[in-house]
Image 1 (spheres, rainbow, N blue to C red):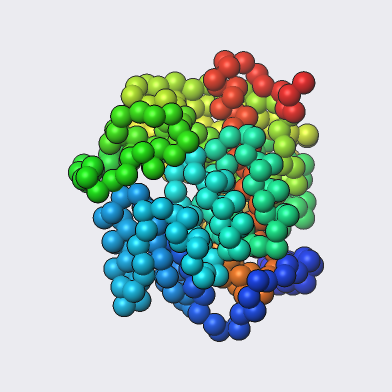
Image 2 (cartoon, helix red, strand yellow):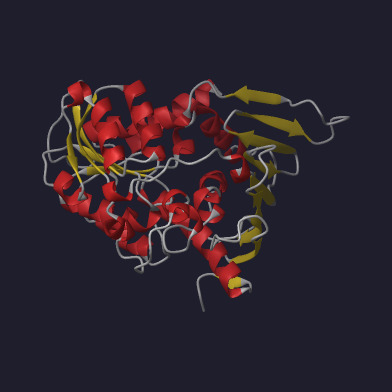
Length: 388
């Protein structure tokens, strides 16, 4: 497998059109980075960036003051400037920005960042609506800037090896991809008390309908339609991206979804989900529930010759026709968090102007699949794509 990995890395390094840079960076020059959206996921991204090194936090923007201050304190010498309005960050001389705001801000912030001359690491899902896909793609492709979507599996070594196996025909024909993700929100501990005097709720809402402050929405915004898209854009987005990548198809023809609010009636989005999407030549199914964490999340590529089971810890391949079929014929384990490799790839692309591992089209198509499934749920019917 190492041979195929080297081959693929060579293709990525040499096969894409180079993008012109606004500033020529030396190979070891420290990147000047701005932080937009300083919540829990941004903390994960900065932990990964620290492992990569070669960057400096110059400025941070968040609508909640304690989060701004927390990022400022982790900056070198606590020298980063803090800003309520993210546009003030974009006015500074930066090489790149990291964006991990709620979903409804993603396209606006990323487009503004690109317009201001910055490269962008944009958390998933990169869009909040179907219509935003074309907007974001145009913003990126009409510019000379790098946008890395936060689909870190694209840089995760064992996912890359697994895709090589699938595309090389090791599984035979693959008619079905099963995906799942279970998380237990019931087990979450008590939340931090929000100091509403330190929060600009109106700015947090942005273009969402005006509504009173809610701690549930502030902390669990992914489960309200105004700000997120539930499991299908938070969790399924990662797995459908892997399916798109491995199967070389990124647009479903039909989608159905059964969803219920059995545990969290205060949410807009269902906490218990079964979904099915039909692609040319294969189906993708998803199941998940937010009150159980046994098995966590993963995918199964069910082939006629073998089945590949993969999650963030590693993958196993089980051959058809082997008695008992319990022992994998191939097994690989993860040796490094893919977010670190993904950030490393982003920093490299900022310096070299290569195409990143997760370009805008991958993020848009992964989010689109989740949006289409949510549309089927909201309409309580099967959705055909593209719409007739």
